Image 1: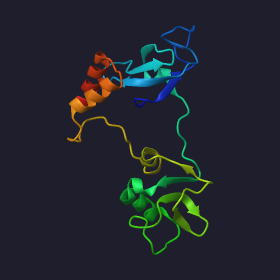
Image 2 (image 1 turned 180 degrees about the vertical axis):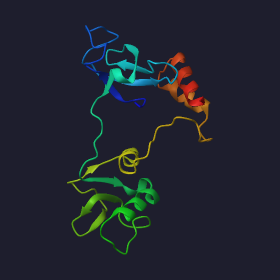
Image 3 (image 1 turned 90 degrees about the vertical axis):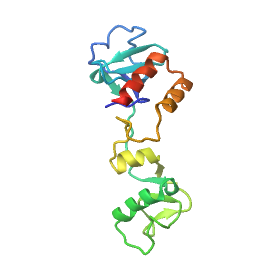
Length: 181
């Protein structure tokens, strides 16, 4: 399932990969702006030429999907309990300091020289990952919102944010209907 904001292009084996048409541009990047759960062509894509069109998932390919680096680090202060717990459960070396409650700010994987995962600054040989990337690629959590289970998210707040992001009223209506299911 492609998420809103995902960068895509039309697949070369798609029926839409034909003569370069403004609404079906070949070899042009776009991004998913709507995931409409009620139609067979459920992804609305905005192309870099500002044109839009609807597609099936099989017609699109993601551009440069994220690959977890071999050596990565994360700011442990983003959620010390969750991130520290993962490091404590998965590290090979056992030390007295639990990373869920202590250690330095930046947590590195795999272990740094000296059998430590934490440092007060990011190590230069490691690549930073975001908290969402940590949840998705390390914890293997699905971070999509399919239904509104969190009562703190109000439809009015979402609609307001979508209007500020310059979605048109039909797009907002489609998004809100999907969230309400």
